[in-house]
Image (tube, rainbow, N blue to C red; front, side, top):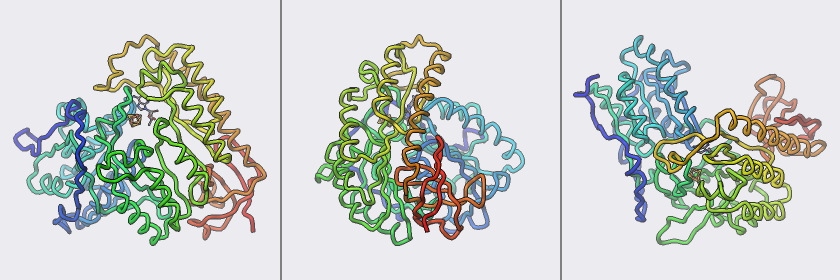
Length: 480
Ligand code: 5AD
Ligand code: SF4
């Protein structure tokens, strides 16, 4: 398509995305934006999702919108009338995968010129990405970001009816959209967004630019959503936010924090409550004490530490020290002795020395993590760390990653072994991927369990005695 046919040509700007206003967050009601029902009748879509749970939750909303328009999901890419890539920008290799996929999808566009190919999610929030799509991927019809999903019906109408290419990416968010329709992936476990965006500006991280200002959802909207999920038979919810511990910090007129939300949700008849992700600097003792009440509050905390060196933490702008992190971990183990703790760690942050890396290993040993997502630092354009001097070779960074992973795997195994001989509660997800006579599900501590059982148990919570433990999974027998 030529440039003359491009509409809504709004490109993102990392600089604008940095501007934060301390104003009240307006709430947009999706129902008021929506009036083209039936538009997708007889047509199909396929969405490929990259990245974190926030993207998975957004995909459920995009599917919801498409299905209200009466599109149906296609089994294959080949047959789809719309293909959307919901992308992740957190590391370079995630972005490269998307560009690779876009290259591969060119053939589908050749075979079916009416195919609508779109890119959404975090990558379009970066100006360099949009420039690259404009320059090298002329066959992409639709580009939108994380703040304007609710306008998808309008964009599709323009692409289909006017045959115009739509590129619209808002740099400055300001709103929360309620009442978006949703097709949830799972019928027993649900994501519940409690807040959007991030105001932390860790120096390595692109998320505050791609997801915008921190905005907490109104507590009544969250509680109503959870009550709806309970009515639909959901057993587990995971509260989502980039820093759930700062929930409510942006409320101008009410004092209601994450711990208050947990107290309110704890009273509801939902079997399991989880949350992710936590920020150590905002994880208060009040929250630890509330979690110690157990019940539907699961004994599992993901608490990204990123590094065990105070110098590195400072350069990362994490706003805590290894001492304060250890103190928080001590309190977590003191009040919730049965807890499973996992973390995120970045190795090879610019300027990280061997000694500083060793400090991370020491911290890992101290904290007894039962799992971790570990990453080699990836330079992100527009972030402060982009310009930090970095003399460590990639080979050396990989060596550090492997050494760290060896230690983390010891923690995984220890975390599994401690359940041998114990009776655990398993929320049964479905049949095991490897053997269709075996059921698979997760314990309260988020451990994968395989056991022999009837398919009718899927979706329920079953007591299982653990007979053996491996690094990544437990095996057990159902208690009759
Ligand atoms: N390089 C490597 N890892 C990163 N993360 C975030 N930004 C980067 C980056 N630039 C990791 C952090 C975060 C997780 C979601 O991704 O560990 O907690
Ligand atoms: Fe990124 Fe830090 Fe925000 Fe997490 S808290 S999303 S690492 S800026």
